[in-house]
Image (cartoon, rainbow, N blue to C red; front, top):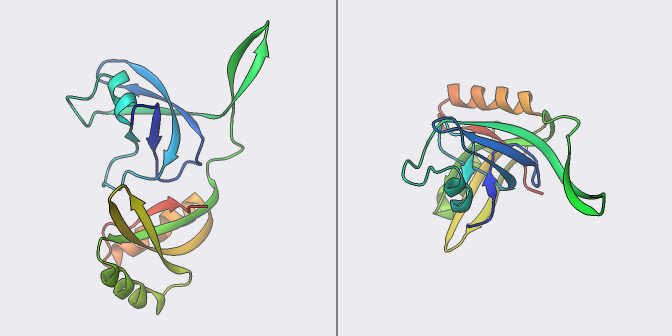
Length: 171
């Protein structure tokens, strides 16, 4: 909660980002360690500590700019440890899927899964424990390119699943 971490739907875990609060110019560096946010129109969900660094606790939601820095490694330079970021080859390549729904009741997820699996390949229900809350997430498809997953999400939205979105598959 107080670490400099964040959730993002598609960036690889352990990717570092520079996040700038566009309302006040404050910046912080965060590490992706979770998936989300699962709210339409939002691109990143910051930990309390990171949001505090950006002075956005009272506002809650503010416009931000994110810059992917890459993976972090520490290098010894002139007798002092310094951070160095190694850029990913591509943020468009990976292991992606489309989340169609998330339910607290397992039966609802199973019903949606059964309905979708008649039409789509690679339909799964995954369990996500978030503290005292358990969600059953229904996901469709396997894609190696982000744009393929985003295209599939738009197609599912047009077919009556307005909250479908592309997400990186959990390892």
